[in-house]
Amino acid sequence: MYQTLIDPDQLRVLIDDANVAVVDCRFTLNDTLYGRAAYEAGHIPRAVYAHLDEDLSSQVVAGKTGRHPLPDVGELATLLGRWGITDGMQVVAYDEAGGVFASRLWWLLHWLGHHSVAVLNGGWQAWCADGGDVTQQALVPARGKTFHPKVRSDVVVDVDEVKARLGDESYCLVDSRTMDRYRGDYEPIDPIAGRIPGARHASHEALLGADGKYLAAETLRRHFEGVLGDAKVSESVFYCGSGVSAAKNLLALAHSGLGMAKLYAGSWSEWITDPTREIAHDREANSGHASAG
Figure 1 (spheres, rainbow, N blue to C red):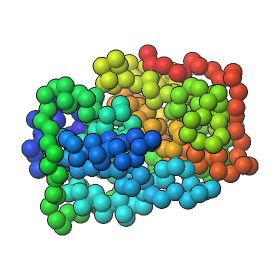
Figure 2: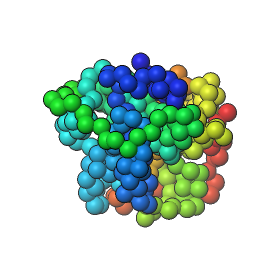
Figure 3: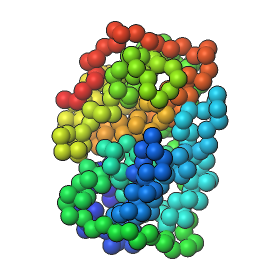
């Protein structure tokens, strides 16, 4: 059972196993049609396609939610069943963006109590480089499959909890965006720059090596120990712009062996919908937590 990462050669051994489901999560924020087109042009055999906006998020409510609200549990469970994913099945998610979008599905399944899920290490690029088979044939899952969610409230927090714990020194809040966005120097997506007060920094971009694969578990462990310090992993909360790239940090944290932290799913794009919520914006942010190792 793979619960964090799986390598291409490991997936190749399992690819014909009926108890293994593969999900293509390729996506780009600036072209939301790209991922499905890429899937139709060629994908890993037996893979279904998951669209970030349409499948892995619920509808945005202007002025209230972030850019990628969590999907409705019942609707997501129905979709998973329609894809042929059932309880206990091994799920493998992949993308071509360093695991950002695949990690969203990884986290959603953990949130629903399904732990047999892993992200393809190195993604689509590594699969192709390793000589993995590619097909244009869309999978038609068997009918009548049912996924039974067992929602874990211990891995997610809402905006009210984050706001209530501001200033609490025992509360470890971690911003997963790039350093310039964390500092408030630059904001390419959301209308307001800055960070949530008191947040530490750990960019999701610091997790991969030059080969596009995740750093070794021990290297990741040292990285996150430097970020979290004495804070308990189970009481630490990660956020990003909209609750997507933070899941990549949560995946790497779990792979390091340190355990499962929490996600503030609404993240920065939700935080800034209320002008009464505090914002930190300066150029003096500590960069000590910005890189691995």
